[in-house]
Image 1 (cartoon, one colour):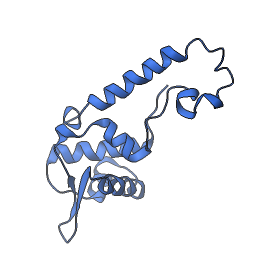
Image 2 (spheres, helix red, strand yellow):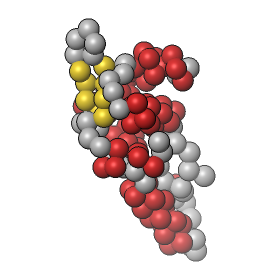
Image 3 (cartoon, helix red, strand yellow):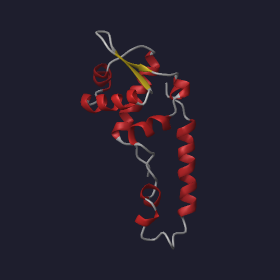
Image 4 (cartoon, helix red, strand yellow):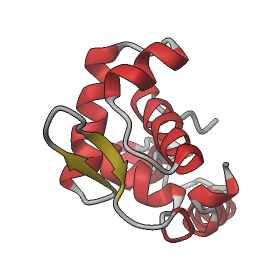
Length: 132
């Protein structure tokens, strides 16, 4: 079934943390607080910053903060920023019909595509503010 990557999990934890404290925090603080691997978390936060989901503040009291309100950031925004796309629930969705050996005789492709669409809709409509 659908499984989010560790990078997405760490990104969601970091975003939720920033939304709950509403102040600047560092990757190190988040890493230590949640016992996450610092190097991977720092890379995830750089991606989130590059895509303007979080803002990077330089200097001695620098760190990261949400770049926009938690109400305007969807879970899909985070997944797409980190992974590029939401993983498909079956091979033909994830990799295309040409990779599926039974696509011509498959009787469940359309219902599974509907499930995929529903998952994507949930992730699009679920906002960070609902995780806090």
